[in-house]
Image (cartoon, rainbow, N blue to C red; front, top):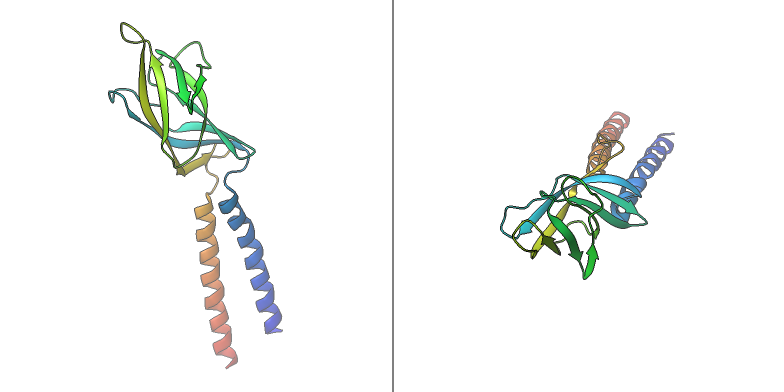
Length: 166
């Protein structure tokens, strides 16, 4: 009877762990998220809105990059030119990104007497990803912590039962 209880507990543990591990390996599910973004380079005066909104579709990530100025005419990423998606407010671009990698971009600013192309580096911190639909949704790290606590409780309880039967 005790062996059956142990087997059932182990099966439950495996069933809890599998989705957590699968989510950690496969990356983000399709949806909208927020992630911390940084912009480096240029004169150091420009910045981007952070956290930035990202959309994941089929494993491809597109970021909504909101610059700190309305005076940007385009942004170039990997040789592809992206135009602003808004007409009012600070220049906003939808560009493909990869989390946790430096992404070289160029942006043309019209703020000076004549247009200037400025090189920047964008970075999106994957450790800060939060679901846009449920900002309180636990991260994969939180699930791993919950499972670790369950394992410790299970091992402790199993040890208690063994001591009683001995």
